[in-house]
Length: 86
Picture 1 (spheres, rainbow, N blue to C red):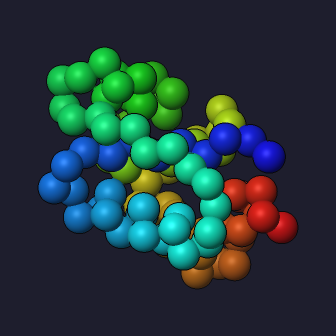
Picture 2: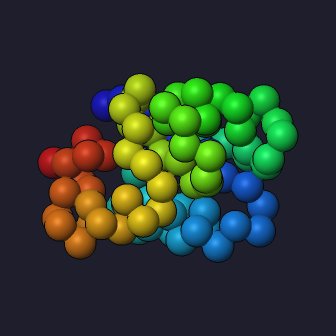
């Protein structure tokens, strides 16, 4: 199963919500602290194709997007498959 990574920053309510959703799926993931102006934030920007917001979620090298994108996938019943659970 590809690694799941989420770039977050402290105090971000969208990051908290996305992390809670991933935890509810009982999947292993790495949370990467990426405050504005850090190399980690630049890495998230580069990997996502230019998205400047956090969180940014990746499964392997595939960008799933941010919190709203995860919630949309969940509502559509597609998040488990996107995370490699299906």
